[in-house]
Amino acid sequence: MVRAVISGYYGFKNFGDETILSVLVTHLKKLGVDITVFSSDTEFTSNTYQVNSINSFDLKNVISAIKSSDVVISGGGSLLQDVTSLKSLVYYSLIIAVGLLFNKKVIIFAQGIGPVNNKSARFILMNLLKLCTLVTVRDQASLNLLSQFKVNAKLVCDPVYSLEIKRGYSSGAVGVQLRSFKTMSDNLLHKLALFIAKNFSDRKIEIFSLQEALDFELCKYFENILNNINPAIKTEIVTKDVINRIAALDFMIGMRFHALLTAIKCGIKTCAINYDIKVEKLAKEASIPIISMSADEDFDEIYVQMQNLKSDELLRFAKTKSFDWLEFDKLFVLPE
Image 1: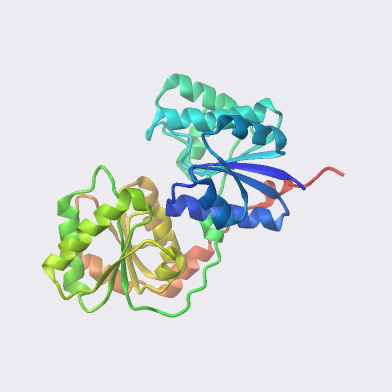
Image 2 (image 1 turned 90 degrees about the vertical axis):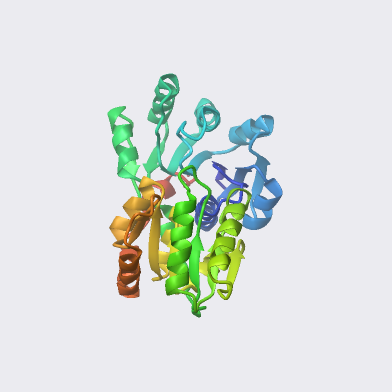
């Protein structure tokens, strides 16, 4: 049995990262791989995915697990960047370096690379990536960056596109998914609340907090704004069973990339809030309306655009995205 360790932003209960891990683990189990995940919450990860788990910062056991493995997987997500912090970039680079030191197959899995502003860190990272067995990136900008440094990489779509979601009943609800972010403002929240009160006051509003430690208070704040505008509007903050709850919506207005992707995969009429270039790119590709963080759009026009979306066209777009596992799978074949 091939043994693989997975390194990423796991155990923090971030919807996007955990959904990527779910897709990855499900695929590896089909290949018969023995899986160990480095996680900040080993009990949560072990129970959720039925895998072995080691605390990400227990370096002694992390290094021992890498030494005992056949394949080291770094990703997915945006791990290799220093915008969040240089410390996290050093950590994830260290995992790659240890894998290479022990002569393991190292896979960079569907990552967004950069920005890496620290010149020394960039030099070290690019030289590490040149030695990896397989490097896959999820966007053209990452591919272009690696090309500049002569790193051989392959462009793939986000692995969550391969997630199988069954849409059953429609709850008739409208989803609003918000995340804490530096450009979030009262102006956006109030305009969004007025928009919902004007157009969806007869529907239940489900407010999705997809990383509770960061987003719950913002979602509660938005719920209060909405209830102050119209106390009759029914609201609920959703933190669990997220995929099934999204799949039952009629409309979704969201910020996080994977919340939007999940809604689009279900054919739900979706509007993006553009806090990041990856969200803007998805909105353009899927031809869905988009609201800027400054919220200076004509919201009446946004409503018309949402109403005019066709579920069949959204589903058709999602089916054009197929994650390519071919090169990945080859690395899990035991030598005869």
